[in-house]
Amino acid sequence: AQSVTQPDIHITVSEGASLELRCNYSYGATPYLFWYVQSPGQGLQLLLKYFSGDTLVQGIKGFEAEFKRSQSSFNLRKPSVHWSDAAEYFCAVGPSGGYQKVTFGTGTKLQVIP
Amino acid sequence: DTAVSQTPKYLVTQMGNDKSIKCEQNLGHDTMYWYKQDSKKFLKIMFSYNNKELIINETVPNRFSPKSPDKAHLNLHINSLELGDSAVYFCASSQLDREGTDTQYFGPGTRLTVL
Image 1: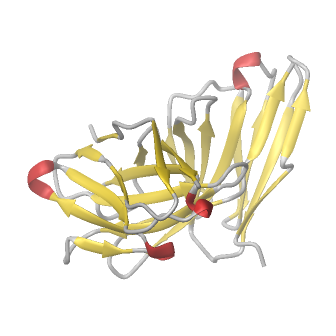
Image 2: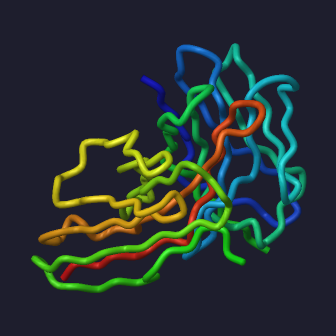
């Protein structure tokens, strides 16, 4: 069965500092991987996704993520965090092809301090 | 021009009542979903419909009944509401793209509180 682990429940960074949110997945074949962001009181917004090709994926709002098959990881990064990035971040994994279940991680809450 | 919309945004009701949440998407997607997000932010899929046909039905009490009158709408009806049903319910929609990925787009959520 597929699963996603986000080891960090809560992360605090200073504005302007770099950010890395960790995501590890378990899946038998080549997965599709996603990062979503949820601002307080809002729905989930897709930041980026990986399905094949270049293992470094660029997303919206200056985020990027790197797929590392050997480590079963798909960590999210941003070189310089803005106060507006404070939100909950969810990693998700899904099987390739077809309408099948996407499994979400438990989320990492990002706090940005001035 | 909201892509995925849900009504109501907030729903407060008594135990034992029956309530419905509506979802509409104007993205032209074939597939729609209902998710439940609990107080710890854990997001769990409940149902999925593709072209009005049920394709995913997770272990959900049969008090929950989804209905898809057309592929742009997926409503969720809940009978005999219980305290444990309190959560945020998200609707989502998706469409397979050229690469075969199934990216889901989420609505703003409906916060259900059962008293």
